[in-house]
Amino acid sequence: MAAVACTLVAAALATDPVLQMRTDDVSGGAAPLDHEQVHEALASARERKKATYHARKLQDEQRGEWRALALQLLVGCDLMCFVMVVVMECRNMRMRGRRRLRDNHGTHSGKAV
Image (cartoon, rainbow, N blue to C red):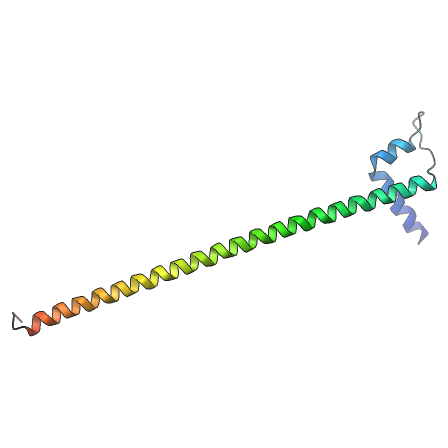
């Protein structure tokens, strides 16, 4: 368990450039870390993790809003197409009915059969 904790602290220190600058002395060698520096590194890693979490959460919310909008548009377009088809079919049926009435009226009125 202690090895895992040391690995996590080392990873946090390796990714934090501020702590890397603090731990390197003038001669270029790495100075040993004190207790406060380790806590600062861990706090910095926690803050980065929180910021990353909130950024991802915001992206997911925005992506969800776009998906909902796209779905509404798709449903709206489908509904509009359905209404257009129904209207055209009603128009065609009405025209067929008028044609039949005209044709029937012409054949029963004594005109040429």
